[in-house]
Length: 145
Image (cartoon, rainbow, N blue to C red; front, side, top):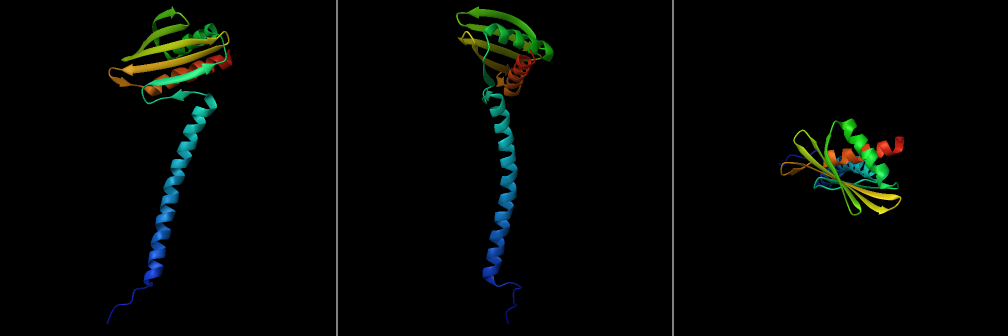
């Protein structure tokens, strides 16, 4: 005599599918929140960040204003400026923090538009978090005057 299962086969299959769907929904819900947060941070600030240590931002401001804000941001972060050089329509600022090399390029797009690119390396490794923070701190300085 066969032992009776507490649930018929079709119901067990449905229950297993329901549990799998509920688990996936819970897991994907967490990913969605993180994705929305990450998108919101980038979209609200207008900062583009890449995985190769670069962060970009275009400011509606003259290059001199952006440079002044960038230098103030670096100072606030305790990052030492090594040099600053103007070539054509670009200003290149080189800086150091601990064992990181930082290159910030300010490109004149128009008299009132400046594109900022920050690249941070630690030896052969790129540090996109530091690049992003430099851009965000510059933006904060621009907003606060």
